Image (tube, rainbow, N blue to C red; front, top):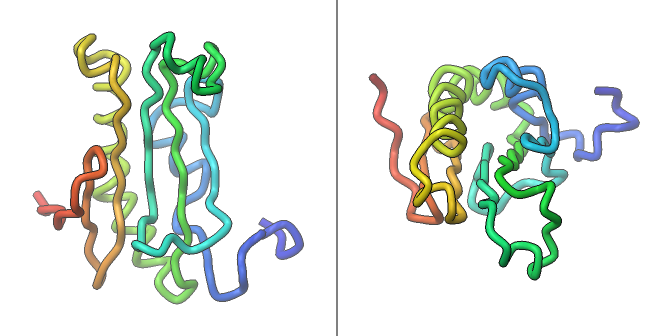
Amino acid sequence: MSARNRRLPRHLSWPLTSTDICSALGETPSSALQLSFFGHHWADGTLLKARWVPPTGSNYGAGLPPDWWSSVWITIGSVLSGERATARQVLREQALPELRNWVGEARNGSEAWALSRHTIAWRYVDQSLHLSHDQQPYQPVKRS
């Protein structure tokens, strides 16, 4: 991305690209998959966050149009530029396969799960990933 269009201060970088996400998920952005890049540094250190928008009528009252229902919204946060390469490697090896499974569960899982809002998020702390499901406290990711 050119420096003019970065929207980030020089000391920050995004650890993943849209190509990384699309390759891991095996799909391209669409109304069912929305990608965005957060232009600031999340205070809690979150680097990758996905949320599920359930197909419920109450969403429309909350301002979400029906074509957004049953969609996944993925946001990539920034990291200090000096940590980008390491964070990228860890996210690609550990978070993206888990994200693919999570998206599959959202789209093909139980109706009860799909009818509720859900989130999954990763943050990078001391060269390791921490995971949070549905706004719960972050826990270290156990490497397999």
